[in-house]
Length: 192
Image (cartoon, rainbow, N blue to C red; front, side):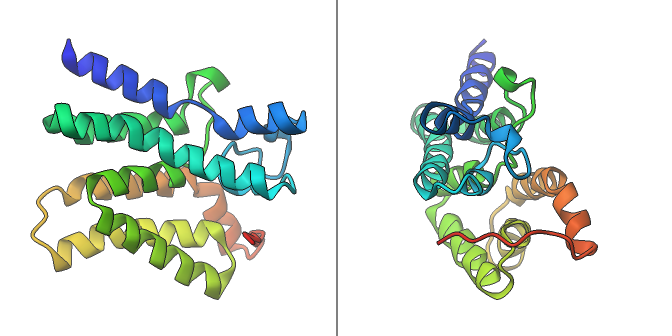
């Protein structure tokens, strides 16, 4: 019963669609009608309102931190299950007919809870790739891949399989971006 409650609460926390809520409340827009139609922070930036974009980013990180930290302190053996449930909630939110975000900000929140060094590595690599390419999607893919690679080659971490699964899920959520990157039709993102 405890596992079901952890999965359910983690999923519900992850499924809060902050990009949708913030653009609807403050801009009177449906974020699904803007840019890529995605509810995440990158698309929230495309509304032209940087405060909404960065608020979405912050809240998508926080909604992962809260349940994962609680599980870390009280039921640590279920931390990876909670992390995966939060992520799945963001990508497939029940409130929006299971069409959510790509999960990058939520994954960042998860990383900081599991091991803050992984969160820092993710941010550094994301920024480095972004400064070179100006593609948020490419930055997200490479930084997500860097985590299991780092763990496999440079640490004794035994749970790197979890991070491989997370990379596969982020790869899946970015499949349209990958096609556009291959066809050189992906739009660059201005984050500042």
